[in-house]
Image (cartoon, rainbow, N blue to C red; front, side, top):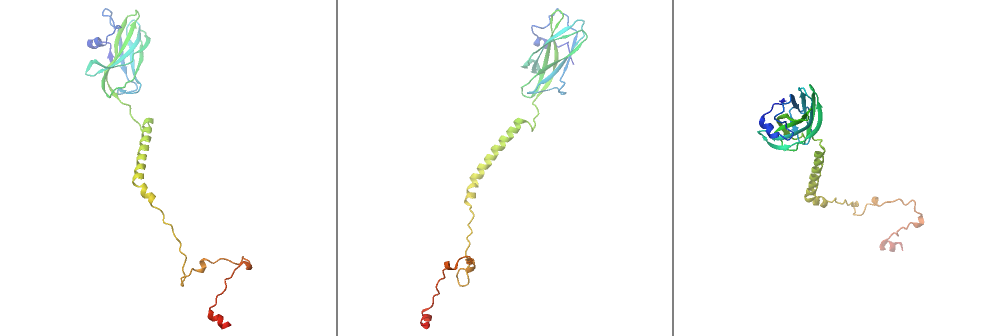
Length: 234
């Protein structure tokens, strides 16, 4: 809980032309703030971080919240500003006895670390006088968003890496095993004709059916007789 009463040094650091004049009485208001979406108060890089400031008007006059702004500071020295956050304009009226929740959203792109977060609330009274109060003043932890295996960018990276590794594996296979694979050829199987006992070709392997050939077309080779048999016949 952050109340309107603040350390003088902090107000001196964050004072602006809208700051309340020393002659004006201090407004009777109370401000509290918290992160509804982050119970541990972590600020996530690259995401929308929502801080809700509750403005309670306990005064007898109404006020109008005009601007909320914030800074990230050194947690050990709140006078050292690390990063300015975007200022948001509201112009939200708050009557006597009312409490209004005012959202303050911001983005962070900074290395994970602990930093001080200070959120300032500028508001006007019914007479147009400017006032400033601190809506939040505490140390927060800057963290990176959690990663997921289903993240599209990671999936694309996995596909690219798989393609590169596959290409390297193919090149290695071709360089060391491709030539040997091409040199191996299947030996042709040569079928030798079967040889009979006398060394002639087996007639069974060359036999064919002659029944369909006309007799006049079949040429029978003449039977050769030895000269001794021919002389005997004569």
